[in-house]
Length: 220
Image (tube, rainbow, N blue to C red):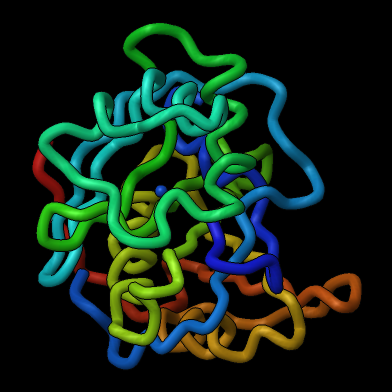
């Protein structure tokens, strides 16, 4: 779910069945690409809550919406009462929602829409839950007109605060392109530490036990 493809984070659209307050700035040129090198072939069935912050709300993506976006159809019937903001869905939204669209079942959720003032301006999520080592990979992105306003920072903070409350989660991971300094800077503000990875990618890891606490809240 990236506004551009300068980074990667696998399967953000597979957050559910299958996206705290702003930590300053949030001037993201291009966010992490949620499609990644590995895409899930199935979805983990989780009922996702609505997450709310000061500027944005994260609203679960429905199966119907995912299928409409992937098929290139008008998503409006599945968004009501929300509206599609300018620039959404963006290019990476399709890839991010594809796992839910192709492998989801009725009643499944898959990631979140990033909503500001009733308009969808982006999307985010995690790749289906923790692996054997307790790591979860997140992805996120905003439509171009919504960047540089702190919205991405708040959306990722909400996502992390929720993920860290889930059973088995020990760390949160985002893989970012080396040149994507805006996204790397935002992740550092949220307590992520950069670790060596395969160039040109930088692995950013947030350990909840070592990083400052992110305060978030959600409304089911």
